[in-house]
Amino acid sequence: MPLTLSCLVAGRPIESGGASLLVRSPWSGEVVGEVLQAGRAQANTAVVEACAFKATPTRFERHHILDRARQLLDGRKEFFARLIASEAGLCLRETQYEVGRACDVLRLAGLEALRDDGQIFSGDISQQGKSRKIFTLREPLSCAVAITPFNHPLNQVAHKIAPAIAAGTPVILKPSEKTPLTALSFASLLVEAGLPGPMLSVLLGPTSEIAEPLVQDPRVDLVSFTGSVAVGKRIASTAGYKRVVLELGGNDPLIVLDDADLDLAAHLAAEGSFRNSGQRCTAIKRILVHASVADSFTARLVEKAKAYRAGDPLDPETRVGTVIDEAAAIHLETVLKEAVAAGARVLLGGQRRGALMEPTVIAQVPRDCRMVVQESFGPLAPVITVQDLADALALANSTAYGLSAGVVTEHLGRAIEAVKGLRSGMVNINDVPGYRVENSPFGGIKDSGLGIKEGVIEAIKCFSTVKTFSLPW
Image 1: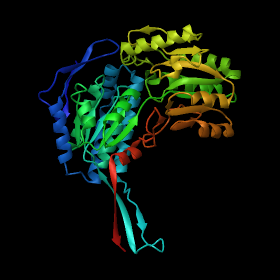
Image 2: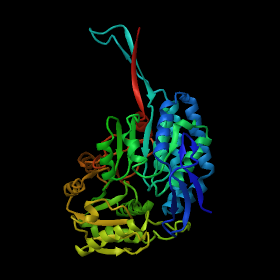
Image 3: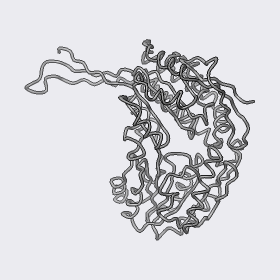
């Protein structure tokens, strides 16, 4: 039975607004939900109510709301897992994992809400000093806007809303119109957990009615955006005098050196390339393998990749579901054909059926193919040979992105050289580029972002402001 939901303004479902949005399964094309969208008037009301809200919950109350939400989410994990699979096309293996990660975000944000993050400085540390103490404390922003993408429709939302709640900041969420059902269901869960209504609105509607006015509104203190480079740069140029946090694309390499454990490398390459249907900013987009081990590594990767069965996202045996829609799959098919025309060889997969793109291993990929120069957001595993670590680092750093990277090596010196030499926000040795925990700093440089970190702890800092005061002592 399709879900029927409405946008939320200050925690309340709207009763009238714009046109309804139909949400279809990328796998079957069936309607899985309908959302009553909002308009400019509702967006303005959301800002007004957020800015007028002064009854900020205490630290304990914020902790309790987040922990209660975690308990509710954990109790409904199967519902949310199937909902994500239905509207995003991701397989249950991935959606169940995503629900678990979102529970971690709520738990860690709740713990941070209890943490006293102030500092104390003594005023008499120099000859010019005084007998005073200087203190800092964090205060919430008046209103923040969060814009989230389709690829993690629950965890990306949790990563923005939970730190805002921990900081005490009211937030207006604009989720992807491709996956709004999960975001709205999660928002309702937070209200059920006791979140005051003015602290959360969820709005969908035409860009000119919702996203653009919110981004440009001078009453909004912060815009936190995760999505494409083009949209992120547009936000940066139009947001005006406010904080902007941008988490954009990635073209993340896995570097496999000649001393690598090749079984580990093949496992990491398959997991990093195919999980979440390859639709992660931190997914492996390029596999840079030392020429002396390229054939042996590639044979292992092909065998690993055979286990990634593609198909119905709701089938428990499926390991790779669809990408977000058929247009995205057609783009992947196109860049694959371009690579083959340039001399690459498809060793496994490569077929498309609607929005389903098979997990694909490609060898002898030229370095200037669009598949590897730009971000390919799907289950493609292109293998490129390199001559040594220096060649790998130069190639890894050659794109416009700088989000994360992985390096497989048994040599500590090479690992350290790679950490120092890679121009990216994250480097993982003997793991996938995207490895992290939910409270560790996360974010990229260059076209992957402005270098401002996310992750629960850093996000709370973004969603708050430091006040410094002093007293005689």
